[in-house]
Length: 578
Image: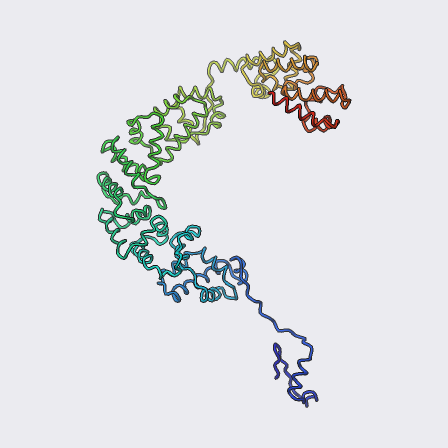
């Protein structure tokens, strides 16, 4: 058997070998090296660095979940076996640092098994152990880069950090909550041996049980800094007078929300001045959200300021607190603000708004009012009528709660008379009573019956037959929604400026719908084009006015080289004047 580089020649001799095989071994090797190479050995594909986790997973033929699982095992083995970190700590770090693991996998050169590749990488590339540690205690990758130690990369180098970390863990604080303590009270992790446990024992001497103190510390890490927080101690002492068990506060501290005990103390002092002992006791026991909602009662303080701005007295505010509805303070305040916005949109005067709030704040904060546009539509009224109705009947607001069905307001005597006159006017125009056309006409013609009749008479008095005006309204009913002065102005411009007879309106009633600026601009340009010999002088009024602006420019203005400039200059002049 003869070997040469990447292939093997094997001969089975069944008869005397040929003459060339009897040559010397040196010549034999030389002759073999001259034989053309017909086969190529299979080369292993060199491993490549993957720029993202998905590429790495695909290269290894695994799912993302499987890849992360293998990476966790490799990281656990590295932290515990190689770096001698306690198993529970290493296991927690490897299980709760997914972003770190993803970043690690992007750096690893994947060659077959992902776990082995990660282990091989970690063998020659030690990691900064503070990164998975900080992530495992609840910090995000955007939070911990700024707090990474500059001259350390191994956890064992910072013994004080570990000592205080273990003190918090042993006391019962969840590991994933310790990150918040580090961010808000980093000096806690610089305490000397035994200092942190002594602070915890000092708070326990206030009568707080361990479960309660755990939640207090998690919501207010700053309590661990310095000596016992005096404001917190005063709040606890006040609570002793109103609750049977001081550990009652555990059930009212909100998770992941900081509590400002200084602010809570100020609120308690204020309530103590305006309420009796029994009233304050009832509020604390029946409505603890007053004190704990909004980081120590900030929602309640905002509510008090809001009510004071509307002129409520301290006694009135006390009455609201004593009879507070079973909803959150922030929701009550939101409802009041919504009502204020509603009254403001009705253009109600500030004095009237204050009067309603001073008398009915408790009711207004107890429900969520519908939006203004929705009420105007459902009640079938305008702002003026609704404003007057609310001023006379503020308790009716309760019936307009969000989610309730709202019925239209009953019409007043004045409205009934106006509707009757409008009906009579439409009957004179030829509409049939109780027909669909009559109902549509009520929506098309805006205004009272007397106003519509005055506008009709104005057009007739310009020199048109009433029958012709009726036919005009069937084609362009919107012209009767114009004010009388606007109608007279447009008819005057038609007759005296454009030199068209008023009878032109019979065939083109929509003329009255167009603005005077538009009519003036179009006919001024048209007249100029006629003078330049670029337009037919017999074009109808409708053709000049009713076509779109781009069509007018294309069909008329562009006929003259200076047309676009003349058009734009005149347009700027006319519209700037107005």
